[in-house]
Length: 173
Image: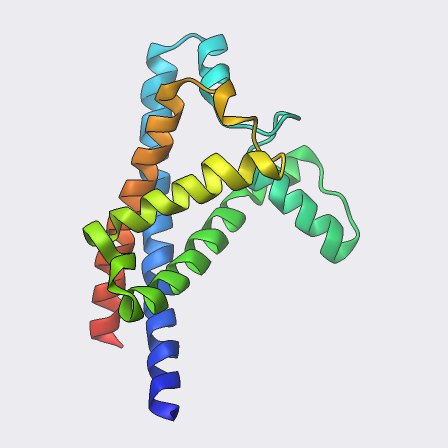
């Protein structure tokens, strides 16, 4: 039994490492894509396509603000919440990576498509379902198809990178 728990811990750690690397690669993909859009779209069109909460904050910044308020009893300024944006993104990416590390070893279907199936599931579960339900973004039908395609692409990058770096981390651990 101890060996199985060690294996779970190792798989979770490998997935955590993979998730952190994948979140970083996903960030580069998103920043590069946003820069390209800034150069080709009007400000109004870019705003329409950008995923934001109904109050105009990024979903991760709004999450940071809500966590700070619940944990520390202190509401963050918009500026401080935006500074915490990467912390939330990496925490979420690492946590989902740890889950992937454990599940992909025990339920191989989770790793379908070299992690792209998982990336798609994360996009559907987070971007399409959870963020709007928690009022961290507007409703899916309020965004053009191109926004959904960009989000899906970013999560496919996350999933493929997660799979590759989880495998590398497993071999090194």
